[in-house]
Image (cartoon, rainbow, N blue to C red; front, side, top):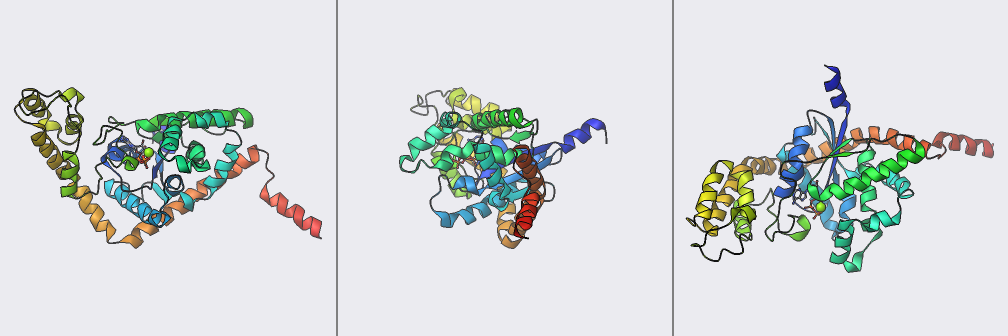
Length: 345
Ligand code: ATP
Ligand code: MG
């Protein structure tokens, strides 16, 4: 192995995915696709972040099932628990402790400025909880618990990652260089819009789920907003501002020039264009959906893979946490025990 490929192999990648429901095509093209691609080049650690889900999820009985569904999506999309570490966030409790340590360093003002905090606070005014404010601190702890230097994310996560970098700089400044500043890794499609043209998101309900049935996918594509100026089929459309056209690029690239021509020359209407897109989505997701359905029949295998992932993650997490504790001046636990014993004798 050459020196440079060795150093790449030693760098760590971390990414988290919220367990707030099934994954959608925005998650796939914005993040999961890179999770899969990076597996063979880096030591990759992927977490299903169930603690983060609790900031917005009130139906706690659904959480475990959402974790399971998320694991199905990720494995069916190509994550291989033998080639990466895939685990559930709460199974590595060291993250909560690192989160507490980091919280001592982060000024409240930094957190209250975060756009997603403001947005979530507006969306759930009766539940502006402490976890919602501290979300980026927990996210930073997720990443640096493994000293990860690269984080595959969608565009919406860039402000959070910038904050993570600020927190790392602050830690390193006070306690000596310990953590690399994590860099985002974006895909070629870092922001997919949903049916209503807002960011495609589980919380907005405007998404196309990877695991949706063919009929559900067709129905959701039918609801997508197209060119608002195009009132009837005989009006030429403007593909450059049409979200359906941009999705053709991802699922139906070969036919895209033809889609462009038919739209701009009013040879077909938005209904036809959406039907072709819906069919292309179903064709392209067919193999993933089949793998997922197969895996769903073997839940024990999935939970076992997640448990093994957590064990492997904890080996790294324990040692990084111990180093952070030491740098922050906390006495090593062993010496505390020894002193207690001496006092008793
Ligand atoms: P929630 O609404 O619960 O926050 P979400 O749909 O935003 O869910 P997350 O679990 O927060 O999904 O995001 C997982 C990953 O997918 C993140 O890296 C995020 O940046 C990326 N991602 C989410 N939505 C999109 C999107 N519409 N386009 C591209 N990437 C996305
Ligand atoms: Mg999100």
